Length: 164
Image (cartoon, rainbow, N blue to C red; front, side):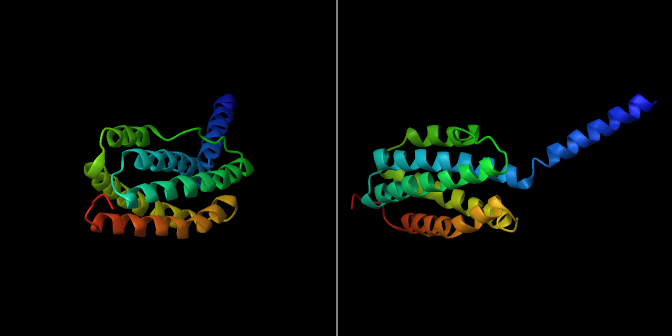
């Protein structure tokens, strides 16, 4: 019976430690995957986009999310998280779908996807920004950049996508 109690206690501690793969650690893993995905999508926009505005936006995503990923990886390392080395399976699937498009159809779908994606990201980052420590600091610092990306994506959806 004593062994059962010790085993139960050990399992409880392990599950607590797993739950303590804290919200900060989970957030940082998702943030790094998201940054990898945004860099790839930005590169794709530069290749498959028709309008100059979409191509410029793709370059902005590539630059900003590359820089953000360095900061996210530093934060992850400081809290003992092994950083993911690429996007999530869902993000890879989204990329694959987008990679089959080009021209005006790409521009339209890309802008729509970026609006939805950045709205979701901002909500997650605002929640994470309430945390203390490296994850919270990283999240707070990135919100203005994500907001700029969202605003730009919204402006792309409202434009007529021409080859300007």
